[in-house]
Length: 190
Length: 190
Image (cartoon, rainbow over all chains, first blue to last red; front, side, top):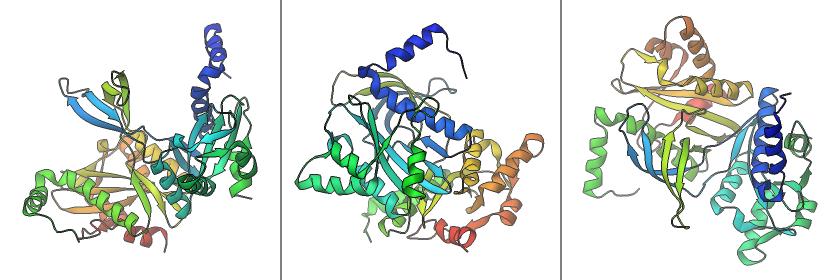
């Protein structure tokens, strides 16, 4: 293990404050994915963020500078890759509400994307982290699609109790920060 | 079929000139992928280009403007998705040389990425288009890895004759512009 200098440890402590839990989820997943890669368990990686480039300066040939660009609405998810020979794809989201996950946090294109993934035989899900509760759930994309459809005419969120019923709670640990593949094993490879 | 106005047809004709063949390969693949999606044959899509964002202006809340950013060296490939339940992943490259494909056209990280893909049970390959010959080949990632290894001490390119021996030639067509899945069927699903 790497021994952190004192300053770094302080940064880590700050990071666990409620205000920064957001960054923590992504970091927990990134660290977990790196653990999976280092130990050759799976090959799952983060996709680049989609950006619309408008203007590029070619003053220096070695490093073209993008001087005007905008974030695009994501049409796919954050993570994908391979586990035990299967395609795996998921989005990680968090919410500060305590009783439900608002569906506006997920873009329609991402729901369609995950639907396409499972229709074509892949494993697709969302990981939702309730920051104020400190609880995380894995929810299969088929349920996400159903709840999203329901949201068109009815409730525009997924209840915490629905995550408890249809999802699978993830536990945060030290080395494998958010060992979601142990749950994937139970749900998709049993 | 969509009937193009005259102006559009002229643009298409210009596009087939040698100088613009580069754009044509990407466009041929994008059009083919769209055909696969529209006909529910496969779900294969282009990943965003990786960009390192340095500075963002938040003057207007609605559209944060990225005012300084740089293209990153790609660590993965251009395309991935699902076909017949399997993970599929590839990079598309072209060369203006007539007798070989220089390996410097592919980043080391992309070779490692494709190696990881096949090691974890996915389908991985490169599509190489010889623009001046008008010929395209699909080459399985295992051969790419071998030729890349050879390049560390020896020849830093893959011969056209090696594509003919170890690869599979792709034919350009009208609707399914570059119907690479017909070759994928032969190579990976026979």
